[in-house]
Image 1 (spheres, rainbow, N blue to C red):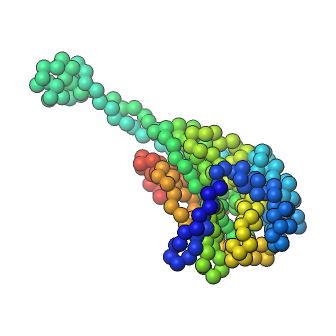
Image 2: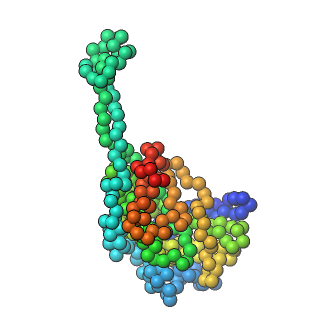
Length: 298
């Protein structure tokens, strides 16, 4: 994990860039020892509010983080089944030209040089630009956001990923969590790479990261509980402290990347809402790659 402290508008930004999701899993595994060593109670270890994290224990959440959410596979497939995937990514006509003996118009330069192939032949092919981009998803959200809303958002995100994949695109996935403290003097942001562009995103892993409440409420909380006590006190990273106020991502994203930020996609109430949000994700991908949106909506 790369740790850095930066100043933003007179406030301190604590940036934590993990090497992989394995570091979050390690923090989850050692959460009990960390609670004992710090002397601060850990919300990630709660066993009396299972509906909030949709897991009864940290051990249950650890299984999901390590092996993916198999039950969530069905939730994602159902979400994909409600979306018209073929409408999300349009094929674009690409015009190519070549010199030939016959064609659509004369290449004046070739003709004057006496080239026998002096006609320009235009050919149109359908292209989907099989390129790669990184999607950052800000998982920051208020404690009152229900499991159902998280799953709806995750289903729409996965549907967009699947639609793009079937057309030759490859999205990487990095989860983000950004919060500020009550006095607005500190930010803390975690960046958690799940898969790189060009690598296969397993549906069970996608289900846990994108659609399961325990990713944030046990996994990311365990990361917060491994911060030094002075940061935990400043941010409220303890039972009763609130664990910070959710905010949009603070740091910049690299080229060929785009962001689904805090709060986006958490208000999907119908299949048409899910379709529109999935379309927004697809359009944002295409804009990032310089191809223009597949729809005119965003």
